[in-house]
Image (cartoon, rainbow, N blue to C red):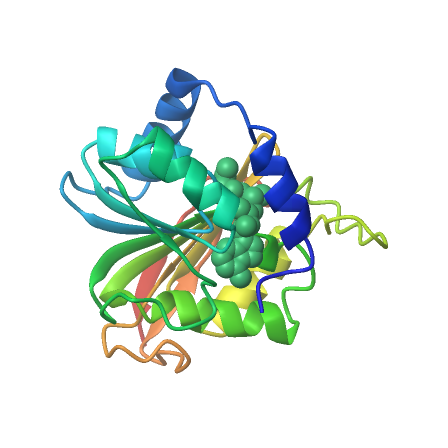
Length: 226
Ligand SMILES: C[S@@+](CC[C@H](N)C(=O)[O-])C[C@H]1O[C@@H](n2cnc3c(N)ncnc32)[C@H](O)[C@@H]1O
């Protein structure tokens, strides 16, 4: 498993990986992740595809109890060296993780390559239930991913999926989801159904997403009993 870019990431992380500004990332995630979704201090968070571990450490510094998982051995080695008090697991997120099912309040994934191409492909369609497996019923899955929303799909490049593409993907698994976009980054949220079965749409709830209202708008998530 893992993905077609795995050798790229081994070299990339060995060369130092991304260089993030701590405070820039703090403010961005405070606004677009923690406040946007009302994530309380102490929430149990799994960061899937955590790379070299920067954001797992950041989320712990922000008061969350976050564990990071990535398939890159070099990324995880780097993360453990840089942030020795944090917990990192080297594993493919589509396989069995050494973590109890239904034990996290939030699963967050930033830039995960599994969501960078065809969102209707078996790879993407298998990934979401794998991640939702670790959420408690009603728990929140957040995908933060770069796209210019153009819908461009070029050979050899990441796809520029639209909010409609993301919404179509997540509504397969839950009727409670929102999709939004802020300056080049899509922010998608999908709540695991409270009955605990991610692939069964909940017929009692209808969720209007930001994409239905206007692309790029603030998420307006209206839950309606029918
Ligand atoms: C664009 S990087 C993002 C890393 C990190 N989230 C960040 O924002 O800096 C994509 C990451 O996804 C990881 N990845 C891709 N497929 C994976 C899989 N199947 N299981 C676990 N990690 C995966 C890669 O190893 C890489 O670290």
